[in-house]
Length: 330
Image (cartoon, rainbow, N blue to C red; front, side, top):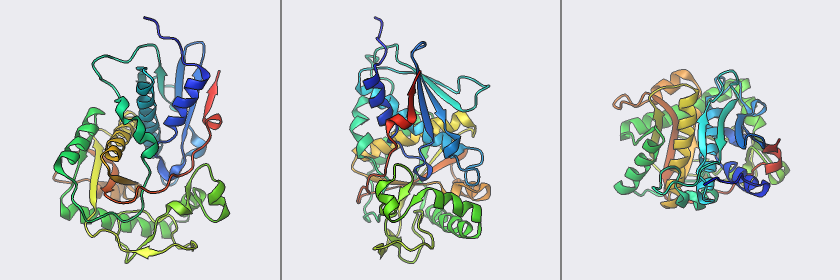
């Protein structure tokens, strides 16, 4: 049975849901173009939103776009569609990250992105607040591990000694930012202070910074740095945070796109499971620190993201670009 192409309203809804994905500094480095002649939706990287200093190989850009692609898959499944995805379909066009065709019905066996994750797309927010000193049940951890595996990635929960290493790496990365003007410029470009925070459609506004960690050592990035932020308090974070490493066997653009989809799948499953989540790429932005982030006791090849999970406030919604700025129809 032939599937009719999505109309403008359907495309707008799908891309709006895709755009709710997390990305480095909330830069939202994606563009979508729907070509009516081929009935194909193209996902492209937006170099105007790349970060040449902190993300020179565009790994983080691919992760964010992969997360947006997974949201699109979930939204399509919710709409009764089964998108056919091709990653990196044109080797001559490095910015064309994926094509999506909507010419098949949703499969009856339930494979693909689960529609039941759809409510979590809007519920998921990055939380830079302290979490409770409360264990995550083993069955919840197992569900998260399985979610990553479904997207050809791995999720592991490191031992206590390596969690301490990861927190030290975040602290080391903070120190490097303070000594590297170009890295500071990337952060300043994508943070929004004062009145600018109220009207932003991108970046990390000051109301999403969370409190300043008391005594340092928290596994969260401090986007304020040395800049003063009005009414921002200081508080203690959990002594032993629940950290997880998301990784892949190889480390090329297609692996980064898969990792981005796995990351978002894990985040949505965690959100529906009542967990608050945050991400930190901070210790992964320098090659030497990234190598140290890998758990030597695991067989994970390359760490793509460090996740912090727990029970606590979900964090405020960060701004999103309007669909008219990220979708074109040709």
